[in-house]
Amino acid sequence: MGNKPGTILLIMLFFAVSACSHKEKKISGELRETIEADNRFEQVEKMAEQLVENGLTAGDGYGEVWIRDLNSFIDLSVAVNGKERSAEALLTFFRFQGADGNIPDGYIPVESGYGGYKYIFSDLAPEYKAHKNTVETDQESSLIQAIYKYIEATGDRDFLLRTIDGKTVKEAMADALHYLVHHKINKQYGLLWGATTVDWGDVQPEHHWGVELDSLSHPAIDVYDNAMLVIAIKNYISIVGKESEKAYWNGIAQDITRNVRQHLWDEKNQKYIPHIYLEKGSPFPANFDENNIYYHGGTFMAIEAGFLTRDEIHASYKNMQQNVRESGAPSIGLTLYPPYPNGFFLNPGLHEYGYQNGGDWTWFGGRMVQQLIHNGMYKEAYESISPMLDLVIKHNGFYEWWTLEGEPAGSGSFRGAAGVLWKSIQLFREKLD
Image (cartoon, rainbow, N blue to C red; front, top):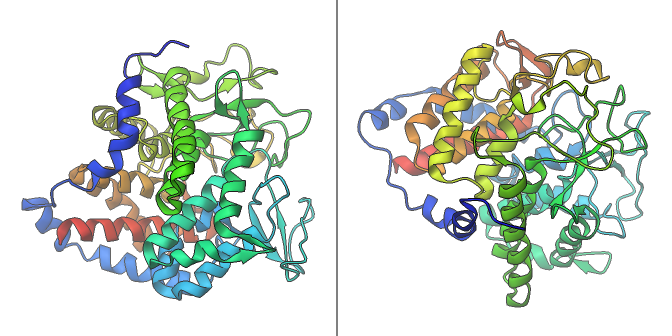
């Protein structure tokens, strides 16, 4: 396959982006004074710490500990709950790991739960049951990222040697990565696939609930899942450090980076196309131009994965802020713009500007703030975090998502939102010190 312009640069960035981001200069001048005088930082920081002290479930509306959520607040959990409680939450996912290496979405006390899931039970954790949303492809990547963050926060490398049913954590992590490589990479494109969902979302359009692959699903490829895997591979290499594995995993990450650039990046419009559809095609009407939609969340993760140059990051930021202005959304956490039309998803929650279809999610917007900081775009980062802080303070809490009018929606006490804002505040502090 031929390389599009910029592919070689992207491969170079694969190795350089993390190192370069931490060499950026400190925040200075008027912006420094503004941030130092902003008491919202300390207020929201304390609120986040108090919330995560109270538990590790996603929020008031959820009984589970979810890995995609825990991944976004595990370092906050370490700060307020200590090593052992945080480590135990991570280990429990491995107690439900499938024979093929797959990782479930979440676990819940065995006496709790909902009627629709196909629950998984394990003698290794009889007090819980687990379940896996099969339309999404981010559970394994999320767990490896969370372990990396745990070790970065604690220095507890011995965690990798702890055993679950005779297997070390390090071995179980490798099995999780191998599951994705062997079972979820499409050979034609060399990229991870899942069902058709909204950006990073986990609901497909063909069902009223929409969380399980079946004969009605439309398999597709998107940037989010692939960015998550590349981040996880980088994290795995960083903490495991076995020379015999590095070349293999680096090769896979480079291939995905190149293939994302070739197949998903729209050079003309400086954005990612929403989906590559596989054997069944698109579930949407033939006259619908899906590429008019700009995916915010997948782009945030693509930046973290090192898929974009600094100029492209800046252009993406400008495009997102334009989307915020045009939609009237509260913040850059806007899931996507414009939303899919009403009726395109059978799940009634995915109406225009509802839930994952154009709701405003601090849980993801905060990740863009972090990447802006890592790339030295401090003014843009402060501009982006400010409305998120205002929403939390105004409504005295962290919520799953926000409406266009800035009203809270979904689960209350949403720990993922707390985690990304807390982490963003820590990064600002590092750049002030």
